[in-house]
Amino acid sequence: MNNINVGLVVMIESPYSGDIDRNIRYLHLTLFDSMINHDECAYASHAYMTQHPRHKTFFVSDYDKKWDVLSREGAITRSQLMRKRCDKTVFYTDRGWSSGMKSAKKYCEDNSLPYEERSVDVNQLSDKISFLSKDFCEAVINDKPYEEFFMN
Image (cartoon, rainbow, N blue to C red; front, side, top):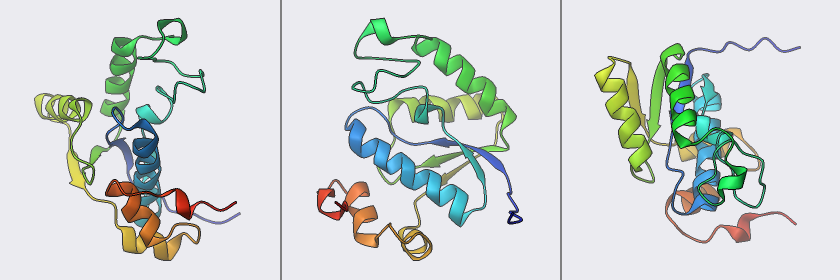
C-alpha cells in the first residue's frame, strides 16, 4: 500500500444549477484538482446530495418531489455542519458564482470560517492524470463542446 500524505480536509464549492451535466463534469475537475494538485481530502455535498434527475438516487431533487428525501433545507443544514468540521472551504470560480456558492461564502464570513477562492490548474491536471487532456478541461470550463473528447 502506498503512503499518501493528505493535507487539509476541505469542502468544495462549485456551481451545480443551470447546465447540470457540464457543472458535474466541472465538479469532478475541482475534486481532481483539490486531491491531486493540493493533496487535500476533498468533500463536496453537491457531489452526492444532488444528482442528475435520470439517476433518481439522490437526497434532494428540484425536479420531482417524490425523489426528495431530505429537502433542500435539510441538505443545506447537513452541509453547513460538515463545513464547520472541515479545515476550510474552497470555492472554485472558473465557471462563476452560483447563488448556493454566494450563500456558502456568506455563511463562512458570518461564522468566521476559513475559505479560499481558486481556479482549476488545467496544466497540472492534464500532466498528472493521463485521461484528462488540457483541451477537455478547458472545454468543460469555457462552455465549449466536450463530447469529442470521450473515448468509445
